[in-house]
Length: 469
Ligand SMILES: Nc1ncnc2c1ncn2[C@@H]1O[C@H](COP(=O)(O)OP(=O)(O)O)[C@@H](O)[C@H]1O
Ligand SMILES: [Mg+2]
Image (tube, rainbow, N blue to C red):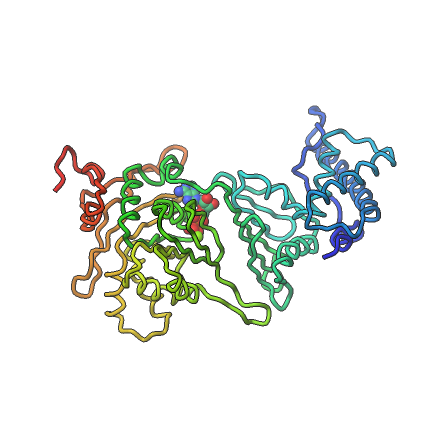
């Protein structure tokens, strides 16, 4: 998109105006004024600001060099700033320093960034952004859902920002394809839905990419698991057990998978397969594969399943699949059962028992027509540990069970919890209180730890003193 078109999209006639950056620093108001006149003054201020902004913005459009290379954002920003300052000077517009900054940022955000969203995107404390039509934007900040006072001008304004997000990826959104997934250059995941599917106007959901991924010590600090559980999981990964992280949407599965992956020794070749690359592995020898949705003509799809099959030919020592949702589960199990041990993935399930039946169902989706008993046997022999992740009612995320898959007994897959979370109550602030603790059962696979000289003290499993065997 040319610069002129891009800026042209934000000319006053189309939509520019009030409140796009309402949360920006406003000049201080007199504290003795009544609330009513306060809001009237605020509105006046906003209008004057918007007016001035659109005048400056349209001047900017005329004065900027149309051949400017937009991908060089530093240069563009510098040039916009120069033109902006010279317009203010030549028109003798006097603004306070705060107003000047606010106006420049708002104009720059519309021209170079993601408009009203830019400010929310730049705030590292915000983890999710939910736009429900132009006038309602919710954010998740430190685990809490709050309504932001940032707004768009109208539907058009939101649509233009969606376009700006998806166009560089060669994707588009319109009535014939009103739903789109995309990613921002920083890795944040974006989903957009417009009319006729959305009845409240264009809807955008952004899950921001954490620059610093959470580490095991962060999770211990948050109370998501204990140090002992961390030690135990680290031993499971080093002993090459096959692990499934189960949980609901947003329960922290990917985060936990990332933490588990961090325990993989540095000298192993790791191949990751994901829908949208989210895992951030610190190891050096990592190959990251990402699936591809079909293009607008419905062709060219490369599924997770294709990638899982392909990665077996890439000499993997560890296969980490971001999420199993369908037929790829069967390929994953077969890989786990044929020498690719130490593999890990996540699935959507609400308990360890539920995980087993989900996995069975997903294997059926591979369309191989296997008898269910055969599938169940594959599941029981492939998967050794299930890590159950939950988002509790108070919003906190916890590992509520670490469970050993012991094998088959008759037709049933035998599961044994090694750690569980027991809720004991709710405190006065509504926080859930409880303890994470070992069940006292020592898993059968501890022998694999010992073969690798990994010794966990007996109290990790809930024994006191030196009673171990
Ligand atoms: N144990 C945790 N404590 C606090 N926040 C967490 C925890 N695990 C994940 N999060 C946050 O929760 C959100 C969802 O996590 P994610 O791992 O992507 O969930 P899922 O993969 O289950 O959808 C992210 O913003 C992440 O940073
Ligand atoms: Mg996830």
